[in-house]
Image: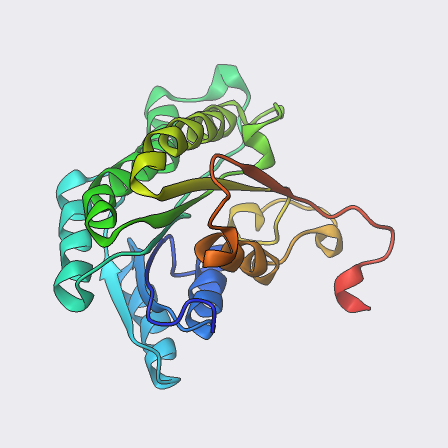
Length: 241
């Protein structure tokens, strides 16, 4: 297995893409710490992994609160002694015209999507240095490389996340800490649940597993500072072939 005995933290891990990634990395041998704000959901995901014989933690944490992030990282280190992989997946969105966005909503979007990425990256950095390196994977969005109407706050946070990724990748080179971003297009998750659209032509949560396992593993040991875009293109869905 490609991630045997690696220790991985996945934020926003209680549903959607994060839950799929927790299962996917665990299936490759990783010990997984699932982090999310909702205690019930995060423990349900962790327990489902433990039932399969996988070492898993469920940690309740608001990624915008540094004391909670520090505590979450400490809990992982106290349990397993190291951190090899961080997946910054926690995110929020909301569609509003620019003139209708309350400042509190704009600030919250940046605090979760960008600030949470910063805080977890900050607090896993020294443990990764001590372990001789690691892989940080930031789940961004095509909204981080393109502009979309009614999503100005979301796009601002995701563009910032990609800039942060590229800067951290350069900083991490001397310490063998690789930092990459995955930028999905439309995905059938709770973030889009209220939008009436054709969900058959969307990424599924499990479609994000392969690229993240690759970036977390030694197979990508020469790859850093990259933004990998995922999107659905074909007239026929290759996943159903």
